[in-house]
Length: 448
Image 1: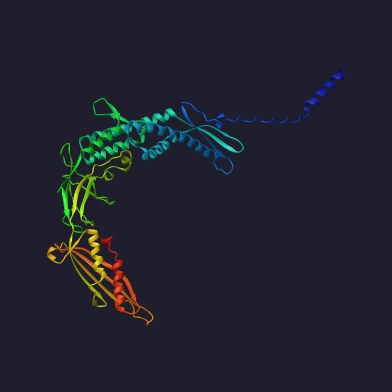
Image 2: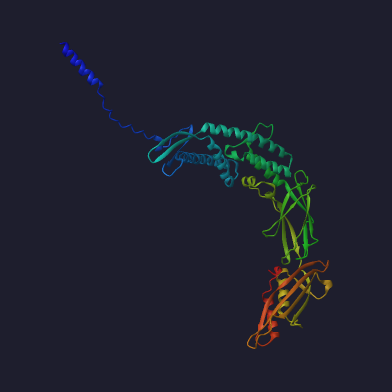
């Protein structure tokens, strides 16, 4: 029995010392795909965005996915801001379309600094990121910034209440620009001061600017002008800008001056006494009655941003300009190869230019003339004729001068462009042809 006991014990010890086979590996459980990959979360506390990027060929797929998630949040913010801005435009009767894109882009760019990564997931091909923006934090930050802007803007509005002035326009424009990034949040102030009434700052600024615009009046001395086309060096008009409600003159006001329907305009600035002098330019029109229009130039007074928010329509103040037909004494010297050519068609071309464009009449007496017109034209053989089978070539050119008969001041001094004429049989006929071509193709600015 003892021998059996030792045998059993030996067998058990042998078995316990024999090395065990390695465990069979078990497959790891496949991670669950988050729900937000297929369906973006939505609740009242956050804006969510889901971004995805390919792992292959991307140095930082997580960052790329995060940026795309931010873009989704940005689009939701844009929709929200646009909706609020539309409501404000309808309530204030103001136009923000030109400026709304800038407001939205600035707001979104600032807000994305507060976006957080809420979750992420990666499979064999793609990286996914779930980002979120806390709505309460977003609106708290906006409210704080809006309050600061309201304080600054309110002070600027109150500074502008002393009446119409260049500084008042500048302060009102700055007030509007200060609150414009928060225009969809309806920035407000107490107005009038001490009344306890709260009103939209944009509506207040728009109302004051339009009231000031209506109060501006432009006066002229003389009230109308009479002049002659091409002669107006002594024609000046005194322009005075006043506040018609208080009677005070307005300094440093930019005025735009336009002649009839011409696209170009002049700019003039009123002096300390509210007046300025405008001197007519040379008027190159036919005789008749025209309008010289003066208006406040808000492009020079208000910034581009404030003008895009406010559609200011300045009042037009016209001055009648009556142009009398000029009387011209015409003297010409026309030679063809050294000989006088008094019957040249150039004379008729020049007269038609002044008659058609300026209703001019021609006189023989210098004492009756408003202007003195001198024409000098001559011809010159271009090259010697090579042989009888080649034509004669002659070139014609000249000059034209126009002088104010009363003052002796030169109005115009122009070179008449060279033209060529030819004839196979006569050099004189070639010269006549050159003069004819010169008459046909005369290119003077005042004849256009």
